[in-house]
Length: 219
Image (cartoon, rainbow, N blue to C red):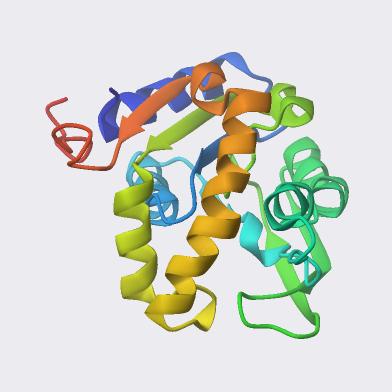
């Protein structure tokens, strides 16, 4: 398992070997409520302290309002949770290729019922830390210079989702949705895409799976 320090070093190695004319693109992914966002925040901060112009972009900004469907909830969610094509084509690839970008997107948060316009502006970016679910679907795996899998059990993820009120739902509805949508959809992801197996590095973020030591700077 990798530490924050080893992830930073891996990204610095990528930065030194990739053309300075573009940004390094790093995927930070894992199951819902695995702790991807917290790790990404710490990673970007650690890179910035080393003088790297790093930015975090959360794929949840491209949530699909039509991500839920009662007829086949897990399969539908797997295919429709995020507007990936729009995200990559209009924001991620242009920023990666130009290092700078000003763009306006259709933004939706977990409880949104309609899209809102949001402006993203980036200037001279060295490293893009793209965080979100399903980033390592097979068609996307070659998009990244490095990829990080945040390892976490479904049990711990559910506890975290309940504590934060995922999707703005009460605990009983969160439990229902995890059992009928999120966990089955992630199992589809595991079976079809092997995201953990193809990730450059794996970071344990669940004490159920072993000691959580990624923030230990001596590692």
